[in-house]
Length: 411
Ligand code: GLA
Image 1 (cartoon, rainbow, N blue to C red):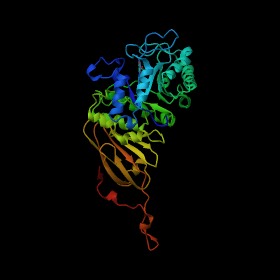
Image 2 (image 1 turned 120 degrees about the vertical axis):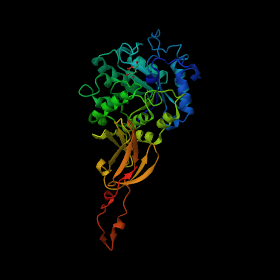
Image 3 (image 1 turned 90 degrees about the vertical axis):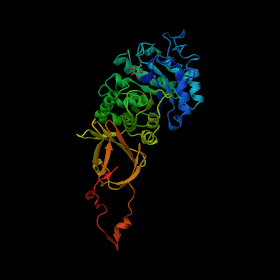
Image 4 (image 1 turned 180 degrees about the vertical axis):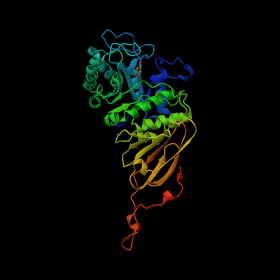
C-alpha cells in the first residue's frame, strides 16, 4: 500500500441496503458489488487505479456457523464471499470486507471479540479477501488496545497480503495522547481518524476543518504504507454541487487520502464522473513520495491555500473558497506561497490549461464559492545563466524582473 488505495465502498451511499432491490432496474448483476465491479472494469475506472470493491456493514448472517466462523447472509450473497472475491480477481479488481472489534458491528451484526480474531483473519484469507476494515463499535479502549495489534499479527500470519484499515483512532478522538500514530503506522495501512462522512457539504467541510486544524499531528503520521483516512468520496451522490465535488476531490488529493467512492456508478452523471476521473488530481493523490499536504494559508477573505510537495521537485496547490457570495479574485505570487526563485510550469487540473509563472509574477485566480482552483506545479526551470553575462560581466541581478510594475496575470 505504497500509495493511497482507490476504489469503491458501499457504506455512505447504500448503508445496509446492499441487496439491490432498492432499484432493480439498475441492477443487472447478481448483486450490488458485482454490478459496481462491472462498472469499474468497463467504464475506465480500473485503469485509473480504482480497483477495490469494498463491502461494509450488514453483509453477514446474524449467527456464526457451527464452527464459529462468520458467514455471509445467504440471501444477499448466494455463493458466499469467496465467489465475490473470485469475481473481482477475474476482472483485475480486489475485494474488501468489514468487521468490528467488539461484540457487535455498528449495525448490530456479529462482531469479532478478542478470542475470535485469529479465526476471523483466517476466514477472510480463506475467502481471498484483499482488504479488511476493522470498525470499533461495542468495545472499550482496553479491548481496542489489544485487539487492533492482534488483528494485524493475525492477518500477517495468514500469509495473504490483506490491507488493514483501522477505525481505532476514530473511537479515541483521533489525537494524541490517546492515539499513538507511530504504533498505528506500524500495524495498519490506513485508519479512520474522525467521524463518518454524510451526503452533505456541511459534513465535507467539517471533515476538512478537523483534518487541517490538526495537520501538525496528522501530516507526520502519513506516508507510504500508512494513510490518514478522512472517509469516502461522495461526488456523484445528492449532497454536493459540482464545485463542491471538485473541492472534495482536490483536497482529498492534497491529503494523500484513500479514494473510495461511495456512489452509484450505474447512474453517475458525466460531471461527477469527470471530476472523479481527473488524471491530474489522481496523479497528485497517488504521488509516490507519499507526503501528505498542508494548509499553508487561511486568509481573512475566506480563501484557504493548500500545498503538497510531490516527487520530481513538483508540488500541488489548491486555492479553496469558503465564501458564499460570488467568485473571488485572489491575488498573490508564488514567492508569497514560499516558492523559491524561478520559472514554474503550471497545469490547472480542472480547466486543463497550462501556463508559465515566475515566482515574482503577481497573478489572480478566480475561485468560485465553495469551489477550488487546483494546480500541478512543475519543478522550476533551470535558468540559462549565460544570458545574464555579457562580455564577462553580469548584466543586472538574475531576478530583477519588473512584472510587479505591470498588471497581474489573470488566470
Ligand atoms: C461506523 C463506521 C462507518 C460504517 C458504519 C457501519 O459508523 O464509521 O464507516 O462502517 O459503522 O455500521
